[in-house]
Amino acid sequence: MNCTNQAKNARTCNCSYPGCPRHGVCCECLAYHRGSGELPACYFTAAEERTYDRSIEALRAAVERAKLGQREKLEALRRLAAV
Image (cartoon, rainbow, N blue to C red; front, side, top):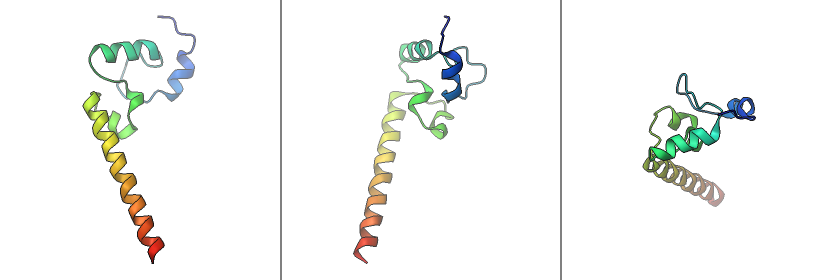
């Protein structure tokens, strides 16, 4: 597919798969991964993306970890404010 935004998209694409033919062609990437029951790299942090686990369950787990991290930070701030 000829994508007029491929060069622009490629600059922010965090896919680390070597030689990916869809790099920077977001519509093809999304269609490919959704067809496999997955999500594209851009849904994940760089560290999570490098695991190549693009499952919806991996995204759910990442969101839960982020929520737990936020709760821990808020609790630490509350403890500091109470001192």
